[in-house]
Length: 564
Image 1: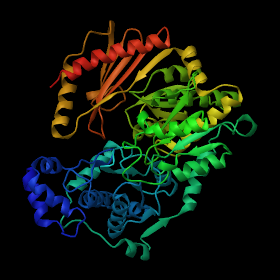
Image 2: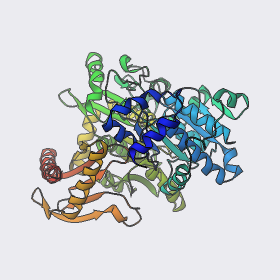
Image 3: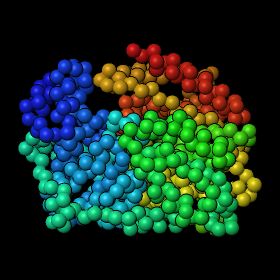
C-alpha cells in the first residue's frame, strides 16, 4: 500500500478512543505530514524502534508498539516454553507516553502467556540491561528515545545475554513483527488484571539497590586516597538519572556536590534544556551557572535514560571546557589502567573494546600497559557483545567505550552506563585532586605522553524522506570519489565496511587513513536522521593537531555538502 492507502486503512479501522485518533484526523488536510507518517513502517532493528510520537506507521504510538511487542511475543513463544517462563524485563524513561507504552507492552506479553517483570518507576537503561541477566530473563524492553529531542520516543530490545538484540535476533523478530495484523492480531489483557493474576511482577526499590551495589564494587580507590570534598555539579537533564546518581555520590562519601535543581525532576518536554543530549555543550548551560556559583571543578551530565555520560572540566584559566566522548574516554582508560597497575590487579591478558569510529589514541594507551584493544562496529550491542569472545580466549574485560559518550566498565552490565561512568570520573577527579592535579592536567599529560591528537565529531541533520535520500547520495558519492589526499596528506588506506571487514560484519561506513596517523570516518546514524563524521588528527603539538583537524574537516565537508 502507498501512504494514502495506509492512511485510509487507519482511518477506517483505528479505535476512536485511541489517544492518537485526533492526530490521525489532523493528517487529512496535511499531505506532507501524512506522507511522512505513512510512507514506511517504523523499522525494527538492533536498536529496536525509534521515531516521532504520533499517528502513523512511521510513528511511535500504541499500534506500532503493540505490533512490535506481539511480534516479539511470537518470537519468544517460538523459542519454547522455557523462554516464555524466563520472562521479559520492562522499563521506561520520562518521555511522553513512555509509561503507557511500557504497560501496553507488559499487557500484550502477559496475554501471550509470557512472564513480565516491570519496574514501578523510571529506570535507567543500564539497570534494565543488568536485570535481564540478573533475573535470567529471555528478553528486555525499555521504552526510551535516549537523548533524542522531545518529539521522539523509542523501544529498545535486549536478548538473554543482556545486550541489545543482535542482527540475527533482530531479523528473526522483524520477520514475526511483519506478520502481525495490527487490527486483529494483537493479544492483550488488562495491566492490573495481569498483576492480579501473577503474570506481571512489579520491581521495587530493592532492585535499584542491587544495581547500585554492583556499580559501587567497581571502585578503584577509596577513603584516604580520595579528596571527597572536591566540588562537583551534576545534572540528569530531567531524565532517569537523578535518584541513582545522587545515591551513588552519597554512598561513595562525596560531601560537596550540587544537583541542578531545574533539571532534577523528570520533564518530558525538557523545558530547561531543549535538546537533552549531554554531547551538546548547550546542555551544560545551567550546570556552568551552578559551577561558577559553587566553584565546581567538574560538571557531569547524563542523558534522559542515563546510559550516556558527558563532562566539562576547568582548564588552566578556570574556564569550563566541554570534553568530547573520546577525551572522557582517555581519562577513564588512563585511570583504570593506572589504578589496576598500581594495585597489582592488571591481568596478564587484559582487554578493552572500542568502536571503529573511536580514537586510536586509546589503543596506544592500552598497548603501553600490555592490554589489547579490540574494535567492533558502533553500539554497545557490539562492544559488550565481544565479551563472550574475550572470555573464551582467556582475556579479562576491563573497559569498553565509544566516542558518543558511552562507557561500560562492568561486564555484568552489557550496555553503556552513565551512572558507573560518573562514579569513576568523580572518583578519578577526587584521586588526582589529592595529588594536586586536575582532570585538565591529567588530559594534557596524556597528550604529552602518548601523542598530540585532536578530535571532532560533527554531524549534519537531514530529516524526512528527502533527508534520507540525500544521505544515501552523500555516502555513494564519497564512496565513488575517495580523494587521493586530504589537507595535504596522502591517503594511506581506505576501509569500506559496506561488505564487512575482517571479523567485522557489514555496515554503511567508510574510514580513511592518512599518512601521518590522522584519519576520518563517515557513516549515517542508525537511530537519528543524520550523517555523522569523525575526524582524528595527529600533530607535533596540540594546536597543530587542532589545525590539521580543521583542514581535514573543511575539505571533507566541501565534498559532502556539494552533493544535492
